[in-house]
Amino acid sequence: MAIAAPEVDVIEFERGKPPAKPIDPITARVIAGALDSIALEVGHKLTRMSYSSIIRESEDFGVALLDAKGRQICECSLSTPLQLGPIPGYMQGIFRLFKERGDSFEEGDVIIHNSPYHGASHGPDVGFCVPIFYKGEVVGFSFTTAHHLDVGSMSPGSCGIVDAVDAYAEGIQLKAIKCYERGKKNEAVWRMLRDNIRASDMVVGDMEAQVAACQIGAQRYAELLDQYGRDTVEAATEELMNYSERMMRQQIEALPDGTYSAEGHIDGFADDPDPSKRDQVIKVTVTVDGGTMTVDLTGTAPQVADRAINMPFVGTVDIAIYVTLRSILLDQAT
Image (cartoon, rainbow, N blue to C red; front, side, top):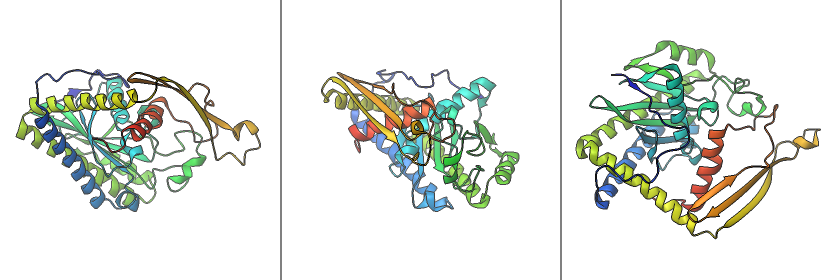
């Protein structure tokens, strides 16, 4: 059964919406623990199945489950924050591309995605998404991201992209492509990957590990719905979203109201003869008003045409703002 991408905005979600079904805090906490266990299992399976040390040892990957609207409902504690933070952006990018193309989610699909202009962080961080079907409906998504050794960039390895001047030089661009369709492997996509990526045995092996890990997450989430019922699980996840918002707002409220400014500079330009390029300023102004915080980057240097330091809007919000604020204010809180 084909399911169209939902009508959701790339950044904004509903906030403070009470669960459709009342749920007690104990049941919500039990289901939250089950979701955390699913994400942790998927993370462990991914590290054990991967070929490269960057995933197995450096743990440069992200694992999360998302609801049908693309909101992140749980994550793996083994994951790197800079891989976890962008996952909702990846998902919104997939939604947007599917809507533009008139594409739809079908049971057995696996989507590969790494477009920085559609929510991804950068080319080497490749995401895989499995839509979770339950009784004929999409109820969520199982998602993994990982940093890959090579994605066909202008120079071998993923570190060579520091000299890239556009997204094409960063490597192959994968914009919400179905690498499995209705459960059948799209061999043409996988041949294209092998033909355009260096060290393809290792890289494609890591990608296949991501696919398998996503499928495990989808299976476990469906089992959770069988155990507790869809209405109960969705009520719990809605309450968890509200709980997360309450916690963040409490931390913001603990800060004195006011406007705070700071600025720094990007390094890596010491060899440039142009003084303006050696001194790229990043300026931020943060306004705290009760439980609301506004982040303003006005005054930051404009994008640079010949250096790989530019970040599209969604990636900036996900990584530079959401992940940073959460790390500072909540850290390990659950």
